[in-house]
Figure (cartoon, rainbow, N blue to C red):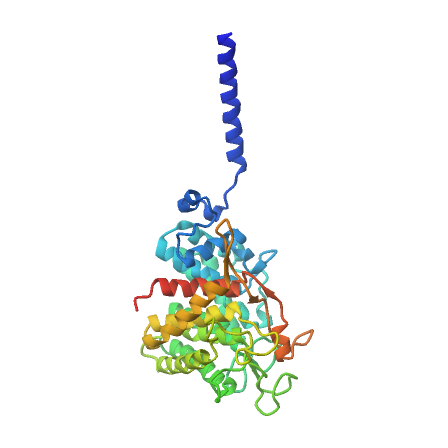
Length: 422
């Protein structure tokens, strides 16, 4: 009888062991999160004892296990929002040395760039300035990996700049399908890439000419889109005055859209990373940054510290405090303070905005996943159906959570605060 009992015990242990093995085999951890010991120790997918920058990046990696999925893409697509989150991943890899962050960036290049250097879904002949932004990821990867396919893809993107249609004064059209138009968005989409590429690959007179061209884009924005009364900038300008949204006298669109202003601030502060110290455009850009920041602070909500979808109409029906613009303004100002472009006194407004985002726009799931809520999904001008730039248009566009155009700037802003010594 004892012999039988002993046999039963052996079988039970064996069955239990195999069951545990099966359970372990069936429990898959998101590849991006495998090395996070803190996560397994805390029992959460994203541990709460990390900085906000890492918590948001890990949350994005959980939501979008492949980096090409960022921005809710259903199939691999060359699109600009991914690059902003991946900029944060690059900086977090540099800070922490966690290889999963680098792999997340690297997989974007591997998936989107073919061996011959061609780019999935990219069509140069459309001359869409949005499509230059993800070139920043390739500049990073080429520096790290020196793969020939990345160099070829970068040269293809740079050739778009040579063919990009321009206004009479040399300003880039936003897209070929939007003739004679400069949008604030386009400064972020094109100029940091243009400046970074020039720094890495161009020398001498050719480099000076490129830097002068970059500064001219900002000069034209200040000339044609600035509202001198408020210091804010309109979303877009039509040189031809033909668009229904364009003022017949000025060519300006009718409203101050939060994210358009956010793009412009990020464009200035990021171009300064690559513009040589000797270039006279530096002082000009820094002066633009100061007047820009002064205008942004004036329309900051005094209670929440946030900014509205339509910046100067906080009290009007349907307007709301919007996450992407708020994150961009905070990033622009705190980075400007950290780099000495703005006095330390500007940190107060940036800190108030950052605290407001965390208090009012961030939610954390039970498993530790961090969400950024109240993001405007998209807004533009013209097209089909026609977008008229009215107040009603902006406040009625789709609102969603965890848009890369907000999570990316939030990661970058968080890193600036975490690295701040002021």
